[in-house]
Length: 393
Figure 1: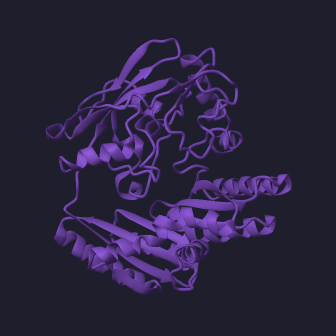
Figure 2: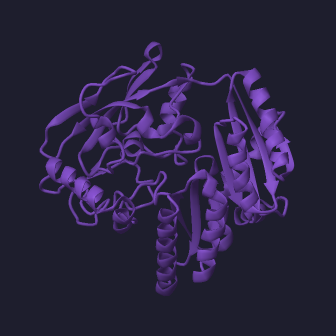
């Protein structure tokens, strides 16, 4: 039994690799409740993320996790994969914003986890167990979510760097200056060049482009944006721009918004996006090493990073019709993941494990933790009918 939302995940999470029944949840698409007074809403699993955000905005509210596939992904999938997004560095990931769930267990029983209150400490935290379980423990059909008021103001500051390592160092310096932005996004030279060619626009010939977003009250945003500008300049950035108009605010985001579309159209190959996360202090080293690994295997790579929380998307350009090239890309991916584990990182910051990284999970968490995960799976799903073959459980 394979629960399926929009199928936007990158790790084969809804591929029925063992056969079986695919349960399409997109028809369960009702927003059951929005309660501004309680900072809470309840939704069915098939509600599209962007639709929920649109409805919440009418009440001056938002749900902080912001997956990049917002226009398509459904809330059941967002929760099952513990999606993150650009605002994760300030607000956390999906697991931090789910109060309770309605879940159909493998034996057909229906349970409710968590509560409808902003605090709850009654028994084991089953809600957090099911968030990120990738459909291996049951079918999430309904969720109660924690909300926040939309910040009064937001601004963006952009900067170019001659080396991606310097851009990575700037991220740590922002925090060391006492600043916690809403997001910090980084695009490398390959992304910049692809967008430039795709749009027919000239961008600076630099190794990295950094965007820092800040939110809060108007006075807070003004003060924080000024501090960010100063830190970026002191970190060796050039062409630092703070948006002063809506046009500049939108323009700053162009390279970020067009990157994923531009790359495959410019390279003529498939984009294969790999997701890892490293300690922020290790970002400069990680950027350099990922490039070196891909160079060694002859795999072109572009880096698009939620740099503020150490999340790196290494985007391989691969001809999937070439078995030899695909094999080299797989070896480069596995070496990258093992390197990330060695430096204290994780093989998945937000995309999950699925089929793609099932064999590598045990290398990260160790045999005892892996055995415990399999024991939990066996207890809840003794016949292994829920999304078998995923997560190595």
